[in-house]
Length: 163
Image (cartoon, rainbow, N blue to C red):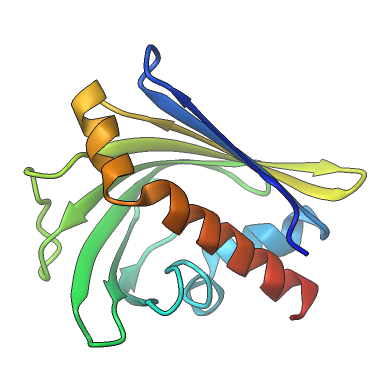
């Protein structure tokens, strides 16, 4: 049984707040966000998979990847690492790209602050996601972000539980 996920939409603040508790140490969750071989195991909602094109995990670095369908349809995206506080937080800008990593300006760009907090039950993982406009927020949600992201977070839980 997966632990619950808090998913709160705030249209006034143009933001999403997402929180989930994992029954493991912060260092385990941190590694699942910072090592390609672990990130690729859960970042895409099944049956899709994640394929990294390149990852440079450092402030000023980036991660470019594709979400790949079972029919080999690819949707490309990337993010830039803005601030990294080891085992505490990661701030990124997130965007859609073409296959060469060029930003697709027709789709929204988001800013994320991901927090990693050690608690008695394990790790509280929080996401504060900020949008440039209400239209951008609605577009991302209409693309199935809530359902897909919850699937990904539950997949990570299954991995850390050893299922």
